[in-house]
Image 1 (cartoon, one colour):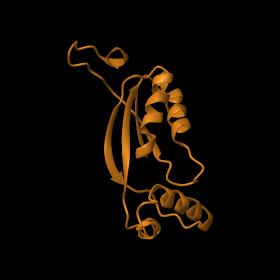
Image 2 (cartoon, one colour):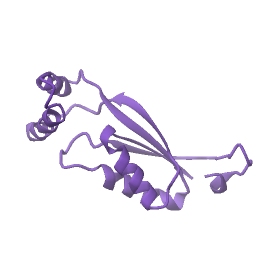
Image 3 (tube, rainbow, N blue to C red):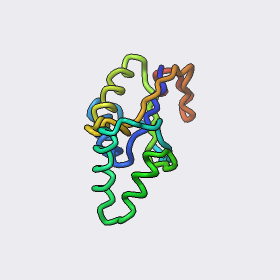
Image 4 (spheres, rainbow, N blue to C red):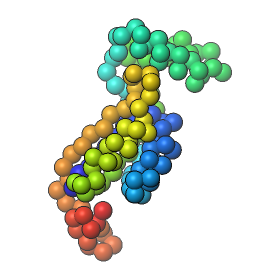
Length: 134
């Protein structure tokens, strides 16, 4: 069994949920979080991302401040964390679905996926264990 944890953009939760449902994975846990990845110094990538930040915040004149905070690492951003518990055989298709729903042309900020082994799962209501409890 695997525990798949994905950190994604806030606006990608709907497409991620649909992608998981489309491959037959109806159950997952999601919650709001804040964070940031490593600093990006590539000026071309930063220019593309700046356009997206400005367009998302076109009504907000603070877009330049937001971009400065993004570049210098002082800004943390809202995101979603999704946790999917899966049988080993399903892990690859779940990962592909999450990537497909979240990859953008920005080149930065698309998220991260962490995969960890899961020793045991127990359904409290029925006491089923292992894959049957997923």
